[in-house]
Structures are given as C-alpha cells and as structure tokens.
Image 1 (spheres, one colour):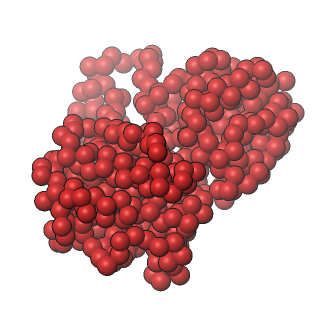
Image 2 (cartoon, each protein chain N blue to C red; image 1 turned 180 degrees about the vertical axis):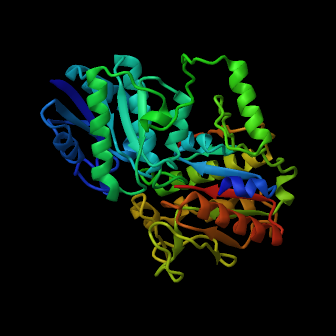
Image 3 (cartoon, rainbow over the protein chains, first blue to last red; image 1 turned 120 degrees about the vertical axis):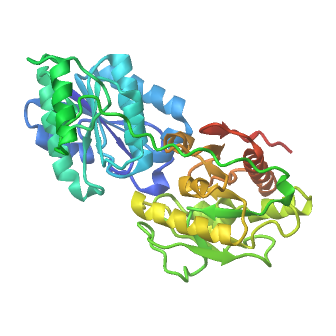
Length: 353
Length: 83
C-alpha cells in the first residue's frame, strides 16, 4: 500500500474561509476535507496518512516557519508521493502548492503532484523550478471541476507509486516544465530538420522539437526625474469603493473599472468606503480604507512638498482584482492607461491585494 | 494591470504583499506590502505608528518611481517603525 500525504489550504480542509486565512500549519490524521475526495478516488491501493493544512495568508507571510512545519510534518509520515491542491485559479493557493511540492521533492526526494488552472500565475513558478520530481496537472478555473481534478491526480499518483516511467508533458497531460529529455529516434537530426523546413516552406503545419519560451517581458518605463513636478495617480485592485458600492462591482470576475474623486478629501473616513473583493478578508480594509488607497500618507507628503501641489491626480482608479481573466484585465489595464495619459498622469502607485 | 500601464510608458510602483507573484508576472518596480488584506499598513500597530508605516511604504513607492531599473526589482520599506 502506498502512503500519501495531502497538503491543502484551510478552506479546502473545511476549516474556514478568509477569516481563517491566517491560521498556521496543522495536521489531521487520515483524509480530511478535499483529501477525502482524493482518498475515494485512490481506492484501496493508496492511503492518505494525514492531511496537512495551512492558512492561505499564513503561508506567504510566514514562509520560512510554514515551510519548516510542513516539511517536518511530511517527514514523520514518510510518504511515497505528496499531493498539494488542486488550487484552480487561486494565485495565492497555487503558489504555495508549487513551493511546497518543490521543497518536499528536494528534501525527501519523492514525486509530488499538484493541479491548477493553466492561467494560474503559479504555473510560471512551476516552470521556473522545472523540478523533474514535480508534476502540475491542468484543472478548470473553479472548484466546480474538483471531482475531475481529483480523478486525474489519483490516476497520476497511482502511476507514480507504481514507479511508472512518466513520459513527456504533451503525451502525459501534465503542464510542461520546459525540461528537455533525451529520446531515441530512428532518423538523424539533419533529416528531421530538413523535413520541418520543407513543410514550413510549403506552409504546412509542423511541430518543433525545441520550443522556445515565450517571455512576456515589458521593458521598464523610464523613471521619473524631479518627482515633485510629476503628476501621479493611485490605481488599486483592492476593491475599495464608496460605501454602498454604487457601481455594483462584483466580488470576483469584474469586467469594468471606475475612478472615484477624492479631490476635496484629506483622508478616507471609515464607514464611507468599503472593499468589494471575494479573494481576501475585507474587514481591515473596511475599518481603514487607507490600506488600499493610502490617501492620508499621500496628503501628508503633499503637505511636505515631496509631491508637488496639484500633482496628485484628484481621483483614484479601482477594480476588484479577484479572479479577473488575463484577457479582461489586459483590456482594463489598457483603458486605465489611456485615461491616465489623457489626464497627464506620469507615474502610478498600484496597490494590489 | 501593471504591465499594460508600463507598456503605455507609465512607470508603476506595485505595492503587494505577494511580491514573488509580482516578480513572476514580471512587474518591474515592486514594493513589499505588509500583508495581503492590508498592503499599506498594519492594523496591529497603534494608529499613529500604522500611519507612519503607511507613509514609509508610499515614500518607498515614490522612490521606486524615481529609480532606474532593468527588470523586476524589489523595494523594501523600512517596516520597523518605532515611537
């Protein structure tokens, strides 16, 4: 029988939502929460020895402590395979899953499996690690695809625990890590390359053997000289809006942005503003909206002349960033950029939650 | 968001507690925020120190806008504000 350890966040462990995201690492014997679903998919061949959980925020805010506690807990169970997630499109959760898999694979030299949506920003970290012992399976965007995701993970775990040779990503269905492996073929490279070239000339489809990574680097915009003479604006994805949410933002997947005038204001008074966002605990932001739009600090710096008179743009821009699809966020970014430029803004303070 | 603004030629100082993610998505001027639910400040501090910390974070962001960078660069505010 194979021993598995399943690592999940506090939410999928069934311990609570955002209000519990600060909880430290803990261990529950056997399968709990989402791990139960995995155990039922695994059947008799493998047993989840324990479910390790951690708060989504705790992991990132106490990274060293969290990692140490996790590694210690995994070690005592001596599993053959570790599973983390699935994280779907949650960036915070996805990143912790990838980091945990990478650390466990390194320390215990065992295969680790996680799963998430292809657009999860953590997939980039997974590719950066390119750890040959870590596999990330694709999932749907939301937890609606939980059952299918756990089925796929279970199948993969079974193969890994049997010691199966896992082939390349395209064939096996896990997300590519960019690892090049040696393969035997019956035709020399020259022949294969000429075949590809001929196909290319004839405009026929062909598959390269050496895919290039598509880096999406943006050259940094030039710095601002003489800051006090420059017009700056605040943009935030925190979801801080006037109380009552007049423009009806949703807590997730928004497709529009707004700007709100603060020209006459020295500060954002609690009770007149609220945060609309489904991806973090908004209680702090509601008590003090300056955590998302630091108007008090900007006014103080304006009074001291660090920011020139009239150089703080009189409105701030907002969209709750939760689960925004990359395509929509790109469009919104372009729209906000156009509006900023139209208004002569030269630099941006972007507060992200 | 940060990338589209930079593409338009606007320097962006991105205040985020998840700075590894910010680096991952190749933001260029990254300012370390306090925590995910409250990037600009720390509610566990007395209000006066909390405000001072927020000021430090904003000032670090302004410095980041003035800085010449070649790629993702992390700017760390001095988090040890004291009375």
